[in-house]
Image (tube, rainbow, N blue to C red; front, side):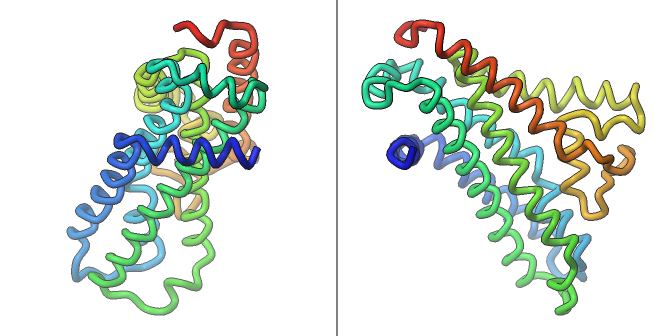
Length: 244
């Protein structure tokens, strides 16, 4: 698995699109932070600027990075030498998903760290900011959720063998289907995968108009991820991986 993760890390670093996506997420955060210059900053404000405000952008970038784990390989035929080097398909799937999750989490942490540093330089704050556990909880959840989205996109990439379709599916799922379902369910938004993650990353554990998190909020998205990965593993094991 170590060799596989190392291979995936080199593959992701070799893609200019991956580097551009991470750089774009960081640049977006820093440019948006300029609007907060000179204002007081408390823990709740930091969570908004560093986590909540950019979460959808980070999800989208992570989905694009994760989708390339398989989509890029199938598109350019590099899945063939990859399978020669790592013939156990279940392990290959696990390694690619893990690498995508780690890359997504690392990118989110990098953007959060850069944004936080700029906010500390531009705004007025006091030492109590760092003593609020809800700040660190939101930062952790914000980074982990991005990694989970990247992992989900990698699983969908194994199913669809494309780079664009997983991103479109996740954008429709998170941006249209879940908001519509939330409007119908009301307080049941915590049972929807992306909205449950949005709630968990909020400073108070409650996103606007979505209600408070429930006992199942933390497991909804992982369960959906597990279901997609099981389907991806079954499809990847059966289908001829050398054809599109």
